[in-house]
Amino acid sequence: MHLTALLPFSLILSASAQLLVLSDPKPPTMAQPNQQPLEALADSAPAPQSASSSILSDVLPSQKRINIFAGFTRDVSSVLSRLESTSENTTLLAPLNTVLSSLPRKPWESPADYDKLGANAYSGSEGSERAAENLKRFTEAHVVCERPWEEGKKVKTLGGGEVWWESHGKEGGRRIMPGKVEVEGVVGRAGNGEVWVLRGVVDFRQ
Image 1 (spheres, helix red, strand yellow):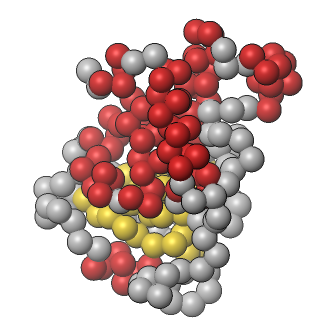
Image 2: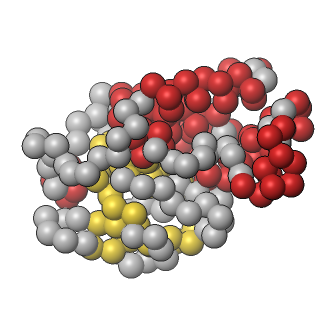
């Protein structure tokens, strides 16, 4: 059993919230000087183990710029199982810490919940359950159940939404559709998939 399953969800949210607060709130506007084009990153991204022997859940901890989202993947059992699977291939779309920190609401918050229940929407055990379900929906929307993933091919996410990607700009740029979410690069490869870093979030309400 995963350790987080033994903890109240309110504690998990507290830890995630601290990460969101500590992260730089300014969203990235451009690649760093040493940023490689996406295709170059896909070909050269190093891994602590050989790509064929590692799994995505092994790759994520080393990527500090997406450690908030990496924490979400460990808190959602359906996502963690997918990332640990050696029989299913996955493309993980991981928003940058700065992106998550700049969202108007936390990923586990829903305007509908606040409209219906007010400021106490996430209080008590029922509130924790609502928050857990919202976080699950958000995280699953960023798990693409396919790899390799061809340009223009519409595929399902773990949450049931439909996404595809298209080329954008120069030097192998890509963006996730719908929503035109820019892909900054590929930061990890494993035997069961790849990790793509996003400069935005996938619409999990579709």
